[in-house]
Length: 68
Image (cartoon, rainbow, N blue to C red; front, side, top):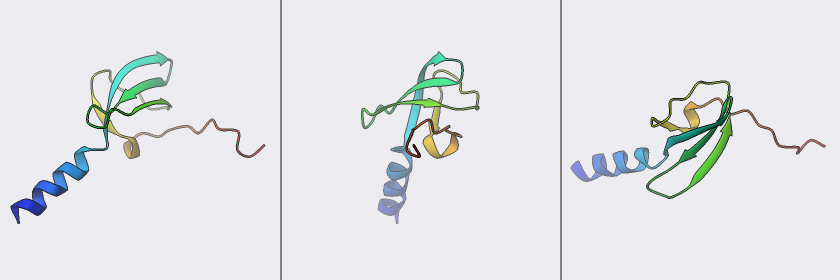
C-alpha cells in the first residue's frame, strides 16, 4: 500500500510548475524543476513569483492562430 501511495504522490507532484517571473502583465514564465520543462503562459489569474501551480489550475488564455 505504501508503494502505491508513494507512486501517487510522485505522479501528482510532477506536473507542478514554479513561477519564475512575470514577463509582462498577466504573462508568466513557469519552470518545472523535475522535468526541466519551461512554459510561458498568459492568464487572467494573478500568480505569485516563487509559488508552485499545476497547469490545470491556471486559466490559460489560448493565443494560437489555429482557426485562421
